[in-house]
Image (cartoon, rainbow, N blue to C red; front, side):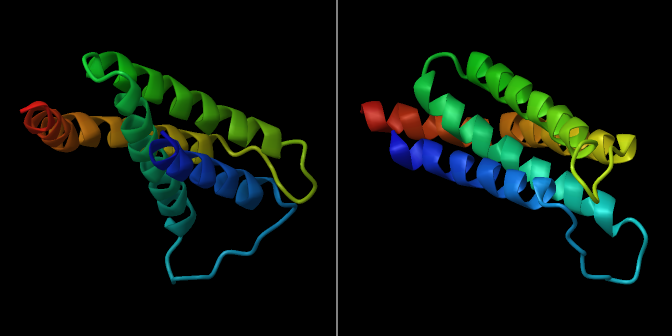
Length: 128
């Protein structure tokens, strides 16, 4: 059970540390959208880890597990941005929240279309 939940827990705590720290300077890669790409990528990874973690519990109900993962990541994506409004040196940016949400939603689609068939196949083979 721990091997399925630990990556999600560690990634969630990492996001909290990085986003709730008073002000972290991001390296400049030479284009303006790098902040939004980072938000998208961080929450994409969170979504995949959440889908992986929650699907382990609901072997016969993967759709339910994916729904729970989506709710978890979307809630976290919005709350994380809202809390930043109250942290010195941070601010609430609706576009950051939007890219958090897009990363979360895209990860669930990715999981459903690409990874879920592999999970189902693996679980079927485990039962043989």
